[in-house]
Image (cartoon, rainbow over all chains, first blue to last red; front, side, top):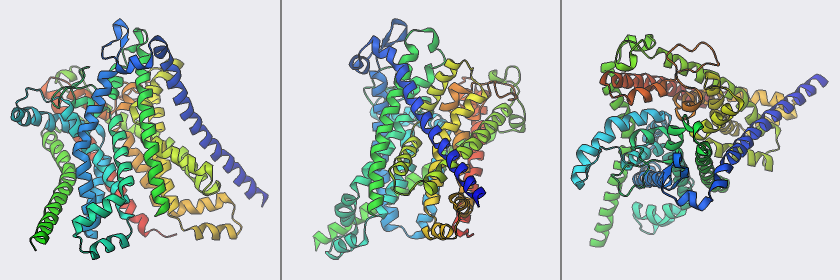
Length: 295
Length: 284
């Protein structure tokens, strides 16, 4: 008897230790990022770093503005493509599709989530980039190699489909049947019910899904790096090359050691990403948890 | 009447738009896999998967990517094992030991949900600076640690979702029979057993496909990985490097390598799917 209790106690303590260990690791990550960023923040103030657009580590100027804008552009383009498609598709799956279709499509969407980023990158290089430079750019009269923020946005859009669709479907399924029945019985068509009742009612959840999509797009490194040109400039149109923050970290980490403040600047980039994504995720998870609690 | 017709017409248009978006999203999957198959198959040969790079490999000469395939398998297997050993206890602790609905439980679960979304480049950057600080060079070990950190939240979250599906009665019954919490936990784990394998496979899939995390921490090597403290090649990184080469043969091998990775991922996905349907039928 006492052996069983002892065993239970030992296991409780070791499990708790593992949990605490993982929490400590997270704390170490955060503190480490903070400490490493301090030298840069000492040398220049935060406002200058974020708005300055000259990136020239050899001369000691670390302007993050082009990279922030690069990230903003690709994320923005991916959202323009992905948000309408995902809302329409998930509404269809929940409101129109029968069980068989749903059971076929949702696992396929999950397969999309399982494809590694580098394969998206390969697809981007093989298809999206040449497609843009040969077919789309001539239509609008732009000259481009195809390695543009537009290509990055398209690849990212496909990458954030799965997370947005799966969450939107879950959110839409929580809408009570009575609400739909009331609207339909008043003579509204199904589409009117969707626009005026279902989408309105599920707005917080949809916003949460989009925010999760944004944070996925922010952090995506390799696929975007492969297609978006990586020129440190502020993109002015869809057909300009850009240089998002994660790509900056990935491309320059090896060579940073010899140049003063360089490592601090890259760690600051990582800290920036971490903070933004942590915040976005936190907000949307809280919204989603609350919805789940209510349902 | 014309008003009604207009509304019904709108309904039709909307339905078509929805169907088109659905087809676009599902179609993109087949499109991506199709592109890789189409480009990769002509370059796929036995040499590529059975040999290591020989002299002049990156100039288009003989050799294969066995070093990268093995490196990736070693890396993903060890970090998945570690992540399971650490993640399952965390999940069990939060679901069985901690009082349900307590602040500790809710905040920890939220934290792991949030960590799930942190991109691997951030983990990679931190692990790299810690490795520089401690004085370890890029090695298989560094990669394993980074990828373990990346996959722990996946395991915790998936197991947590499974444990939540266990009927509360089951827990109550075991407790009322005088079982300790550990004995109850064992029964819960038995209940979700196929699901645990699903979680492990999910973690493995993520681990084998990650680039940003291993880029900085694992390095690259043309030799077969032998020691844990030496740099090792990984499949996604091999694809990335070969694709950026200007030589057509090397690019072709990148397509073939991409095909190999796609194949591994599809096998994982199919196994996951089979296990998931087994979980739905699974009874103790």
